[in-house]
Image 1 (tube, helix red, strand yellow):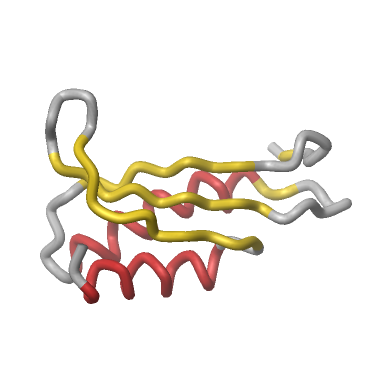
Image 2: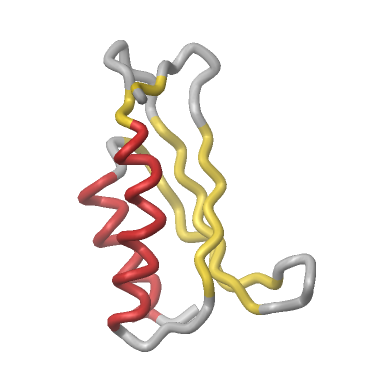
Amino acid sequence: MSNAAKSAVEKVCDRLAPAGFSVVGAERDTDGDPILLVDVKWVFSDKPISSKTTYGLSTEVRNALSAIGEARFPHFRRHFDEQQRIAS
């Protein structure tokens, strides 16, 4: 993965994800197409996490990658505490 792609993902995740995250790197999906894999590990909060934030993260990252000419699709693995509530 290029430094520009990693930086673009990190900037969005820093802004939108109230949790730890890691950019795992370039992978291939089950069809063999190149993808970017991003792990987002949400820290438990008593306050429900807005579903707009969780869904918005994917869109924001795709837009940031597109802006730098990155064509690979980002795939997210979202990890939540078992007790975490999500607000609709």
